[in-house]
Image (cartoon, rainbow, N blue to C red; front, side, top):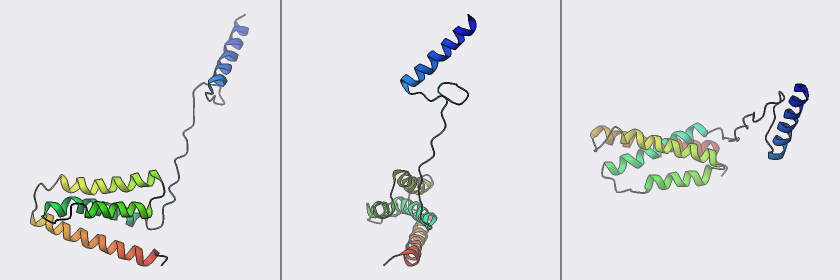
Length: 143
């Protein structure tokens, strides 16, 4: 009696899982799932340089207006252009945006007003961003 009750309970559980399409593991436990594979990014060989560039653009978006440069949308506009040219999927776009935001927040947490070191950082980052752009374009451009 107990054996047939266990068999009936197991049959009901399997039928319920099939009815609601719950996965059953090989051990027969309900609801156990395997983690889906993360989406592929297919990053180009210059991905690290572009991520650094996104971070630099975020820093400049904060620093340049702080130090009196009249460029309210210059650096976010360049970031939008980078996203339009390079991003092919949502996960990669999020990574770029996060790096931009890290650059922005990093300097926003340190500088509340323009100081000589903020101005120097702004110049240094602008030069580094320009260098990355030239090098990546020269090395990987198809034109």
